[in-house]
Length: 252
Ligand code: ZN
Image (tube, rainbow, N blue to C red; front, side, top):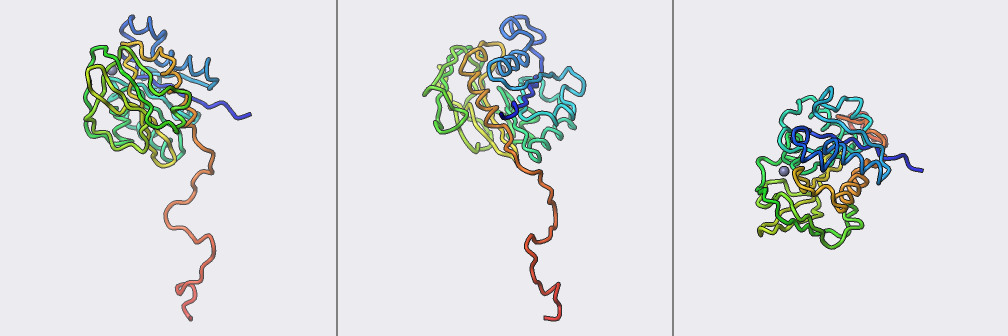
């Protein structure tokens, strides 16, 4: 039997620490809620951490024991220290750790450094209907989902958005206010796979929906690193098959 995927849910833990209305919905905070359904319903091995924990919740040891990191950020992403950003990027690019950026994650300090948006997108916070369309029915992250699904009260994240063109677009959202936005998309950076999903404003009940659980759990399975030997070669290397060259045989 395959080893369970080791998932670390990392939350900035700002609004959900201050407002009971949020923890009434997401007991213990967003990280605890997401961690709970991933462990109970999906059988992943889950640990949960926040920026309040030692080393901002992500020690080197925790990161080295993580197959897929989920980062929930909203308004306090700039507090993440530079050495944590560097370590996460190294784990993704060099080692292939999967990364899932929820809600504002693409525009967080980490998202900007790793993926590269320069600014942001458009948003609106009026609890409007979001209809999420599956636009890539062959994608593993869309597995088991209907043609479209809805969050009755959502925060709008729409175009124009200056995200770098994704490698794959999986979900596109339409909002009752008339706008559209790319809402689920992937990037590859080095050995690592990255998925961004914009629904999930913690003031609303979006994360309670079974479709949200399905998307996140599918994304964990997709982003789990493939097994490959660590890259040993860097810089100038010798030929794998020995070659005769003028340099090695100057007499010829
Ligand atoms: Zn929000």
